[in-house]
Amino acid sequence: MDKLAEIFDSAWPYMGDLHKVISPHWSGIVLVLCSVACGLLIGAERETKKKAAGLRTITLICVGSTLFTFASILIAGEWADRTRIAAQVVTGVGFLGAGAILQHRGTIIGLTTGATIWTAAAIGVLVGGGYGAAGLVLTLLVVGLMIVEQRIEDWILGACRYTHVHVAYQPDNGKTRIRLLRVLDEFRIPDSRWEVATEGELEVADVQYCHFHQQHRAILLEIVNLPGIVEIRRHRTARQVNAPVPPEQ
Image 1 (cartoon, rainbow, N blue to C red):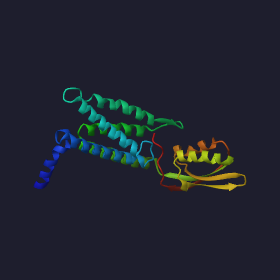
Image 2: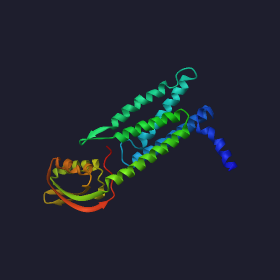
Image 3: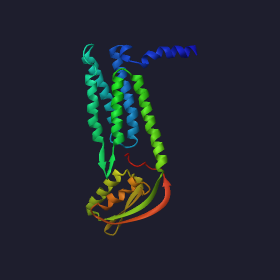
Image 4: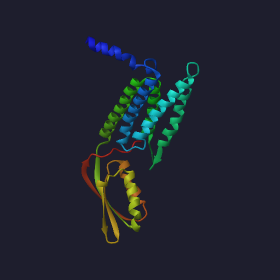
């Protein structure tokens, strides 16, 4: 217990402002590495869900916020306002967050991604201010919350229930298939859940999709509006399998 207490006492100063504990050169290196770690952890969670703001984007936002905070501290010195440049990060990251929020198929998507960008920037500013340990702890808390809330959302909404739909269309020299593949990609239908066969002059795509969630079965409306579609035949099944949850609202 005494040794543990000694280790805790020796490590405690490094839990606070590192600018006051170690030299500026080393503190900058350590804090940038902490910022990279924070960005990677948050970005990895977004990347696994195939979001636009993924690993690289979140990491750059976090590191960029840290660097702006460094610049604010170094330029201001001891006499000027040290928060002036760092404060502009709040305004600048607002434009990034707003760009991630879109209206798509009658719903608003990207709110969670926008909030994640905002949070990553806030953590970056905190780390740049010298509080690397606090940034890492908050990053773990944020990632943990997103994972737990995702599990709760899956439990509330229930598992996906799949059905097959057969889409017959005019090939049009391959153009119709490309349009259909774009829709499948938008709804995150993997290659293993669709196949194409030829029936006379037509091509028929057998697509497996979730009919249980409204956001998933909206794919039918997107397909039926594609040029060249001749017929859609839907076959419902009761089978349940794990699948991506509905897009974030």
